[in-house]
Length: 487
Image (cartoon, rainbow, N blue to C red):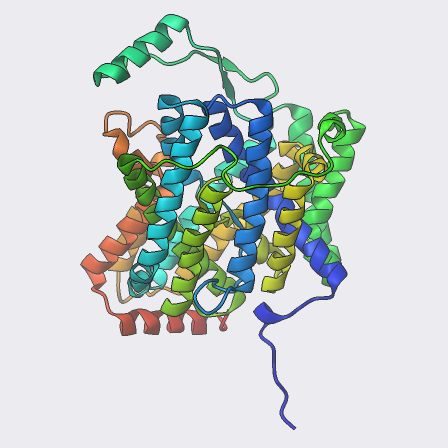
């Protein structure tokens, strides 16, 4: 009698565990999921009800894209790994620029048209993008994943601090007029920027204490428990932090009471989309950035789950980035990509089942249809998530470091240059966020992504020092995995 062994990625935990583990993934990515609709909705000067519509549509489409990516839709769509999909922040800059030039529903229709067109193009170019896999040996993959983790640490620390350090004040009307005149004339923008004021709640001691408490709970559960309880350590830590925040009056439920019980997400709620060639070209650039970043995420998940990412599976995964973007444009929301926050959660919990993310996708769809439940999750303060973010995002960086540990530096010292220079290049947008201010605005989506810069640097330097070849890359990857015990 033969026994069929199910790969951990394809295991189906019992329903109660699936629900808890899926909710854990949702809580981790929720703040990032709703941030983009808030930013773009305000830039478009939409009404509160219209912004709420964007958020519901975003959650709904997050769930659909997650289901397609993790469960799979035919052989053409879905990488079938534990992936949660969310709106890419790479699109925020271009979309805000579009919104400021054409506010209101007209601007929204133009944005959604550009998103739909870019998604269609993305679906067709996904096979071409997947051919890049041979340029990603462990020295490149490890570097990219390490930069992803370090870049995410800024997000986790920002959560723990309770928000941004400074808040923008309303700009002087004369300054706004000068900016509008300069844009209309195509001349340089006036010097200066809207004045900033310090955020009085930034780095509040009680906020940081709650973040530290959440981190301590997660670490204690990780050390002293086993099995299912250990697997949901992040969820339990967040819940414990929420209880403490509520007891201290830092978490309220006013939005829950005001939110509707049920809402329907309909396509083209702002009217038929419009298609502007320049906006479409800009969003296609965003899709390329998304593909490169997603490739890094998928390779990280491949290493974490012990399931090799092949060109075919990579193509299927990237196609969902395109398909999810099309769905987003149709349902009044934005471009989608795999969320790196959740890659760290896979590393923390060790749960490799893709059906956990299927459950997370279903929860997101429900949240999109039931605004009152979404408002309950939204009530969770960011500093509660901060404690969880520190360990999760650090886990992504640790995964990259682990891969780099298997790289040959003794007989091939050139690998040191690949890693050193690429990590440094990837840190440029992190430590000098305004470094692109004298460069053409059309290049900003490319130059403001440290992950993209590190990827380009690592691939180019690896080609320069080591050359390229599919077989060589595969052999190097297998050697690195073997040296690490096959994990």
